[in-house]
Length: 319
Image (cartoon, rainbow, N blue to C red; front, side, top):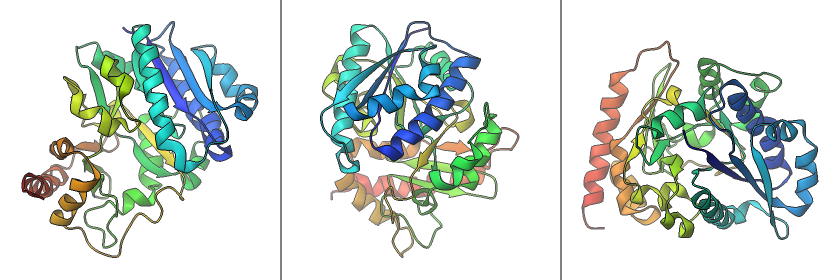
C-alpha cells in the first residue's frame, strides 16, 4: 500500500474554523480507526498570520500523531475570489512533492468531511492498478449540518448520509432535474426520491490519484485539469464506498438557481462554454447516495440516463 501526500488550502476565519473543527476531526477519525499510512505527509497552504491559530488547535496536535505536517506560507491576505488561482499553486506544489517522494496525491478542501474508512477503501482500490479514484461528496449546508457533527465522533456511514441528505446545500437542491428553480451552474445534476439521490455531472472529481509528471503544470480545478488525462480511473457509483460530505457555506455560489425549469439543450449549450468537450462523456457515469440498508432505485438511474444521453447528443453537435 502506497504512502500519500495530502494538501489543503486554508484561509480566512470561517474556512479555518471548518478545517480545524470538522475536516481535521474526520481525518483523525479515519486514521485512528484504520491508518493505511506510516510515513505520509500533510501540507497546509495558509497565510503567515493563520499558522499560530492552526498550531494551537487540539485537532492539529492530534494530526501530527498520524502524518508529517508542514506549512507552506502564502504571502499576504487571501480572499474567496483568489481561491482558484491558489488551488493551482496547491496542486502543482503537491504534485511535485508526491512525485519526488513516490506518493499518492490528494488535494483536499478545508470543508470536506470524511466518512469511515475513506482512505483505507480508496487505497485498496488503487492497489488494484487504477491511477485514480473518482468520486463526489454530498454537498451540504454548513450552517445546518455542522450542529449534527459537533461533539460527535466516529459517525457510521448511514449516520453521515443522514446528515447530508437532510441538510443539502441550495446548489444541490437547485441541481435537481425536477426543480422549478433549476441551477445556473449545471456542472452536476441530481435525480432524487424520498430516500436517495442519483448524481450525474460534467464535473466529477478525482479524489486520490497516482502522481504523474503532467500534474506539475495542471490547473487548480482537478475535475477539469486532471480528468481528461487519467488513463485508468476507477469511477465509484456507490457513495457509501467512499463516504464524504462537503460542508459548504450558504454564501457559496449563492443564489445558484434561476426561476426556470431544466432543459437539456440549454444545459449542453452552457457546458460548451463552461467546461471541456471531454467532460461531456462524464455524464455516462452516475453516483448513488443512500443508506447502506436501502435498495438502489433503478428508476433514478434510467431517468437520468435518458437526460444524459440527450445532453450528450447536443454536445456532439456543432456549437
